[in-house]
Length: 324
Image (cartoon, rainbow, N blue to C red; front, side, top):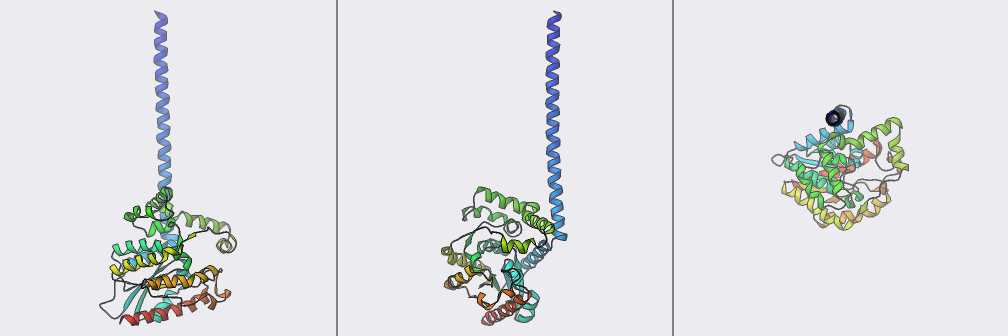
């Protein structure tokens, strides 16, 4: 009898100890999950503070986007409005203050540029801007030929700033968009940290290695993108129709890049734009600018920017005069 009692007590004690260990283990898991959640919140808030207050790129993009979203057509008056959209070649290639001085009072110009933008990115970006009420008489798309023909998913910051939530599912059918890429786009749209992670990475590299960006553009191998020039006319047609549905006339301009591949592709891209009724121009051909007009062999420096801005102003004045 005593032996059975001891056995029972041992079983009860063992069960209690096992239950206690399980409870302790569950508390550890809860504490770990809470710590991870807290870390995510801290990182997200810190990234938001950095982007809104310290990142010149983040502040510029947010300011330009707010200005573009509030843009309204000038059809009721004499002054026309133009929204100029593009990528880093627009940011480095156009002095917006100088451009405004040269085209006023006929045209009021506004810009919106994000790095690494492709023509398909701008289709979805303009779609979202028009949904938010943006209106202009002209939309001037400014991209190098490679960014018109290349096939690539949107970058994280493009997904975060420009693409609307309702358009994510539409991207499933786009070239090069698999389930993993689609999930990256979704998280980049929802999370400030995920959307700005590449810019944070560049900040760390530039801080640790001054001059890293210039070195990277000159010496590091760039990601090779797939090009499909057969898609170019349809892409121009889609954006032209989108702009027309929202009261804007689409224009297209090729900026100088000092790249032989862009020079060779320029005639085809111009022809593709004009074939669907999009006025297109190359205000300053690559051959017109020497290498000393570029900051890094691709983007214009201040001297090259001045030349291109003057040529772009002349193109805009001509287009605006056709509307009056």
